[in-house]
Image: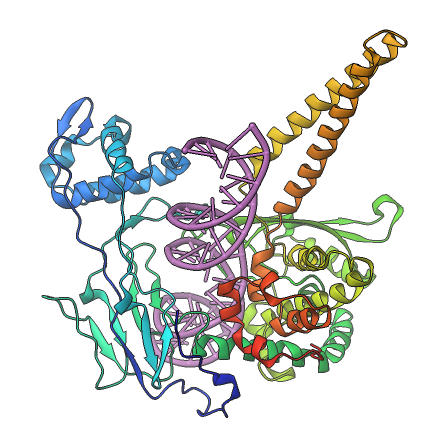
Length: 536
DNA sequence: TGTATGACTTGATACGACTCGG
DNA sequence: CCGAGTCGTATCAAGTCATACA
């Protein structure tokens, strides 16, 4: 807890572009303890028969057993991927025995792991690193034990992520401060690259992506970049009009690729779309961003409910979160979209076949230093928040925090940040509300019929109680609806903390009521600046 | 010029700690 | 005291984007 507070934001920039540090010292990542074999009493059964596995195959089996409650173990792709990778760890003779995963009984193992509590102690010596002599927290210093890939919609779900050994790890540090590898091991590589901020890296076996040990969000290296991000997003205000003007011109261009560029930029600038890079076929879930929209993802409504032209978007966005919105657009955008849709009868064709993220970025780079498509998303989010905070607070001064959340919610909605887990509660709650409503009308009828009877008072009370109950349930339902939105992502990654701080100071709201401890750590630079007059 | 890779950046969720009505 | 719900952080998957590569 007693950490030195390094106000790096008050220092003059020390490094030229591309250099991040002079001295970098750390102890390398912490490795998980080795696998402990099952006691003799715990067995795996195949087709009712006891099977003895070698240590590696048993370990991989344990990964599946631990997940037995998880719905993914009923998912066909997950099971298939797991089974393939699992069999690869078995000896040839044993492998022969395993013809189908259905025949494997993991229940005894699963029960064993449920009983067994894992209480691994956090090792203090690995949690920190020294940056130019200052002690800083590391974000992720534990290397995960082997596991099964759990991407929700990923074709790789169920595949084995193999054990990571020191020999797989590259260390990045100062020249004379190489951490000691675990006994009996060596580092895969050691490098001294001050152009990057990571401390260690390794490649996960599935799906073969590089992983990094990175500084904590509150560290200088991360905070500095966050700050810079908001400064870039902020400077977009000086160029936005001009960019919009150019897009307008492009809508009328003879050149189809320019028309497409103009429309794509309009969508990104107006609805905060992600750029939509190409995804590798068969390696990732089939999701889209702006450039990767397909014809089938947009429906055009010429005269929707007597209103102006509207576009209906319906596609899977990042992390397979559905994007479903109906929005008004300008006439010329509408006409262009109409034309771009023409060639793809079956709807599988790319909507914007003449633009891609590279083209877009080359163009944007020429308009403003540091401008990329995601800058628009940040910019719009910040503007929205600032505006919302201004609007809302006049009316809701009584409850400042909830009016803050209201503004935050608008940003989350803009960014389509959702949570998906609460469905079950939602429908259960709806059932409850239905039931409660029925009971209430029944009670009311009874009351009418009873008119002057002796038990009128009692019935009246019943009605009152039911009404109260229903009101509470309705309120809860509204809260549940709000929970479909995820406010955290926008708060952490999109809203300039200085906007929030200025609001806190103005309305005398303690920062602690808005940001949690970890968030205050991440935004320490903005909190310390303490600028009431900040304008984005 | 397009594709692959590396280095961040953004995203939802898992999970343990805490809280609260019963 | 207890189980359900909530909160906060850690975790790890899935994006963006610059650069290396062919």
